[in-house]
Length: 460
Ligand code: GDP
Ligand code: IMO
Ligand code: MG
Image 1 (cartoon, rainbow, N blue to C red):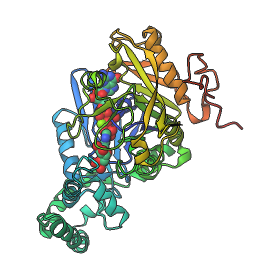
Image 2: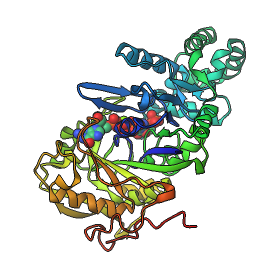
Image 3: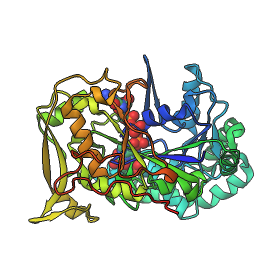
Image 4: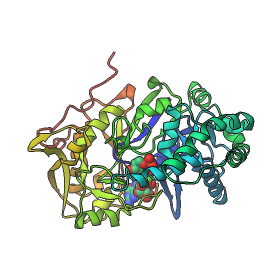
């Protein structure tokens, strides 16, 4: 066994929490590798709904060690509150481990995030205002505070004595806000450190030890590929690397220790916050997706923008994440639509474009080129075998699979753990499927039928 990465292929909220929870049953360690409490991962087990922002989704299984890796930015108060909520609901959190190298979201980061968004009024990124960008910026600027610093109040005070005047100057002079007080910050940080002390460890050593012992490690991404700082729709992105490569830097694994990358996507698209979204729908279908899909942000409660599935960034996402298989969520939400559409290219300034442009201006001018498919009326939420899905739904999944170029192994038809269809085997790096898996003549979009599925990558 080695490591499996779970990564969002769209703009976040693809259902990574459900995917992680589903796969976590058979693993030993679940690691969050980037992002912070901007994430909101929902897990539904019967009547119980858990919304997690920082603690990895594996926490619900007592046999799992949930790890917050070095690549995460941690708001210690959120973490303490979330652990208290879990304990209150009967979920043990003694096993939670936090990297001593993870950066701390300090109260001034939260204040700066809100202040910068307010200043951009009209041009704002639409951040979650959790201090994510400012905390990652300080990390890169080498003026961050790390979890280990919370355990050394003396050294922390010296560090904050250097950092805080700079932060306060910006808060007061640029944004007209109140400054933070050194003694108060040191006292709060020391309290967090005391309360979190049993959880703060070298998580890279922990993960490497687990791998050396042959245990299976799951790395749970937050956000999604199109929100990636490098590969997403910059500047309308988050400040970390949600892509699978981020699991190596932020989770403490080497690239060749990862033998499986599960891409998570939903059967349509959503986006929260600002930024171009070519397939966005402001019509009856958009309302259907919003309402049936309950597309309201888990973290901020904001209404998610909804639209048709966009297969243009899909090819890009599969490639840059080395996706070995896909979990397709929320297929049930499309029931009742007379027609289902897929965006297969863009028309930009009269030209057909098949790749995601990196310029936000170009992307903002992109008009989707759609393929239309017959819809289906049947409620599919009770279905547990792929062959029992309505023919039109099966065809839609086949076409998506052909466009992705890797198998859609799992299909989800409801929020509950149980509402899941195991459609195909999950190939791993060493066993990437041969041409047999998706050969279905139905697969492939326009001019793309049978698009070179899964050539072996590990040929001797
Ligand atoms: P994440 O951030 O990627 O973990 O996704 P969120 O939890 O923010 O949003 C996904 C939402 O869809 C959650 O409310 C899930 O409970 C729900 N969900 C996941 N899979 C399915 C599905 O197949 N069908 C339905 N109806 N809901 C789902
Ligand atoms: P999960 O893990 C969807 C979006 C914000 C904003 C942009 C930058 O639940 O999929 P930030 O606060 O990160 O600086 O905001 O990123 N965003 C998300 N959108 N799902 C998320 O997480 C997100 N986390 C951040 O809305 O557009
Ligand atoms: Mg979410």
